[in-house]
Every structure is written in C-alpha cells, then in structure tokens.
Image 1 (tube, rainbow, N blue to C red):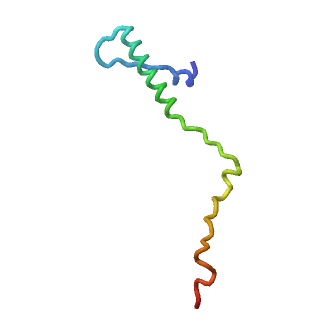
Image 2 (cartoon, one colour; image 1 turned 60 degrees about the vertical axis):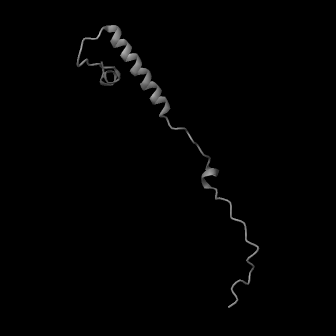
Image 3 (cartoon, one colour; image 1 turned 90 degrees about the horizontal axis):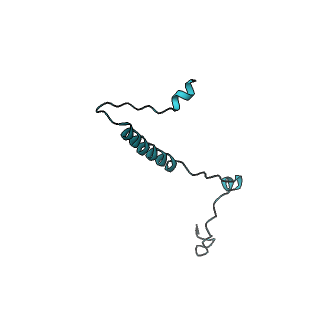
Length: 74
C-alpha cells in the first residue's frame, strides 16, 4: 500500500475492556455518522459574485434640498 491509502484507513484502539465485534461496529457506525454530519454542516456556502457586483459603488445619498446654496453667508 502507498502512504496515501494508509492515511485514509480507520484505526481503532481499545484502551480498556474487551468489546465484542458487534459493539465495535456499533461505535464505529455512530462515530462515522456523527463525523459525516458535522463535515457536511461545516462547509461554507459558495458565494460567487460577478465582476459587476464586486466593482459597483453603493447608491448616493439623496441631496438635502432644505439646506440651500447660500448657507455660509460670510
């Protein structure tokens, strides 16, 4: 086997007790399902924006007509 294939295999170490093959299979199934669900939820949404959306400026605020031109009469 190559190094890449070995990295993807599952390795289980039993540190205490003597579980049966059925118990190990149940634990592996639960952990695998939880890992799969977590990895699917952790994916970022693709938010592709066009060049137009990236370069456009925001709308200008409307002019205030109540101020008038001769505000500073110095």
